[in-house]
Amino acid sequence: MGGGTMGSLAGKVAIVTGGGSGIGLATATRLAEAGVSVAIVDRDGDSAARAAGEFDGLAVQADVGRSEEWPGIVDAVMSRFGGIDLAHLNAGVTTGEADITKVTDDIYRRAVGVNIDGVVFGIRALVPAMSERGGGAIVATASLAGLIGFSPDPIYCLTKHAVVGLVRSLGPQLAEHHITINAVCPSIVDTPLIDDMREVLEGSGFPLIDVSAVSSAVFDRLSGEETGEAMVIQAGREALPFRFARPPGPRAGGTVGQMPPAEFAAHDQG
Image (cartoon, rainbow, N blue to C red):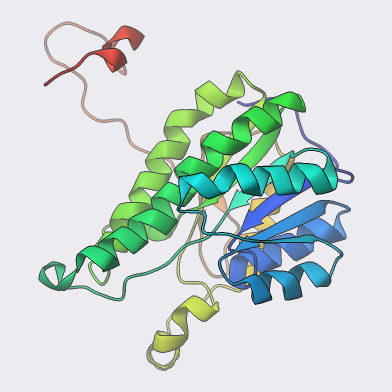
């Protein structure tokens, strides 16, 4: 488990990336209604400004996939609100390309930049700020595609698996700073991200998830004490943590669930 229970979020400060629309906007609105000061970070400055204007929040136009922009993001929020307690690292993109032979460098780099780099660089920049406040909470938007194979968009699937792995790995480390970290893994959500496929999805009868179900799960994890979990969100069901099966253990020596020693992480395996 992570740090102590966050309890009421009133008076805290949150950053929401990709907060100009969709899941991010729903989370930002829910947080603001709970008395949280919210900074909306989005590549679309107009969308960020419109969203922030709804609840006297802060709009920051930035590309979260660029590491050099994160110090400015953190400084802007600190200057306006005096600190940072919460973060929903939500910005994400799909590629729309199923054929690996047609995935261009630009398509690949954009997906990795937003979906992975935006989470890694965000966590790296936010942990010191949260530590200064005695702790905090981070939620990353992954996807059900981070837990299963998803052949319609394998690169998107790759990036979301990376987010889930990062969250699970960082749980114990960030707990030492009294920071919780979790991922939400929804199936297909009714957001502008699916507009180009909306007619096909609706015609097939596939159940879309309302953004409110995702924002509710995010809010619960930002206000709770669980950490290192991947929350599965399906239409019509309560969010629940995914239970990962343990891989087979070694047959020669060792014990079930034994991990390599910490020193091994610094070893160059060539």
